[in-house]
Image: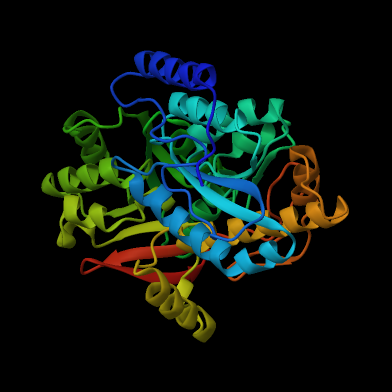
Length: 405
């Protein structure tokens, strides 16, 4: 299935990846596969080739976000493969690792753009990488549909190629703050963030809603992600003893903060966003310490309905994978992309559509009936049906509470 490229294009791609790795610190590296390989999947039958990339962190500490979305997207493509073969096309999936790194997002985007068979991108999974990649895709009218990038700024850039099926952080943050006040009775809070696009944006929205609703903010601080000792800010928090600590960031840092705050005697509520949705938070913090940790998510409980339970059973039997954090939204994001691609093919008289034709079809998505979320894109590319849900950790287990009210 691999398409041969000229040596000049390959050399340019490798050189670009090396340059960006040098600029981005120790986490960046060149894309690990070309746009047709490194995880490409598709049917084996004859037909004109079309490629849809799935991009997110496939390695590193945030690999759950990319790998679970990829698994769902693969499953959706497998279900639709025969329908595209009947139209004369073989649709392949190309999985790409951006390591949740904005610079790596650029490198991956430029590599995908260089392959004319790539007609759409499911991703990127995180906000920072999505924003930088979108600037590249926009130049070539290459459409993207993210299952999980929640940062409000992503769809405020005026780029028509950008779409997401999940809720924005201004939705997630405001719903979290309202839930904390109305359902948990919070009157005082210390708000923290990791200084990154996702975490800081989410924390700022929470702070804004708390202030609007009269919840007293006793502190607002940014910390450096990846630190092992947060005692300076934790000492400050413990001395003020707020009813809630809200931290905008990911589970790896949240777990450490929870553990260290509990060790210093803090007994209040912790809250965060969908970055907390990982069993590793409990492993890092300890099961007892993680009690009273509440978080919002843009994804509801997949197994809450009989239909959802049946889907989980079928998915796990077919793929051998467990359903993870973004499996369901990877599935529905690919469904939206494939629906738009099919419309573009038909509108083009059965011929291979241009990237711009696929973009136009996806952008016009209205009342798409996804398995887990319905989708209508507004002009910005946000999903008008996106919702926010609440979970908590209890005795080491994730417990679904319901839709945030």
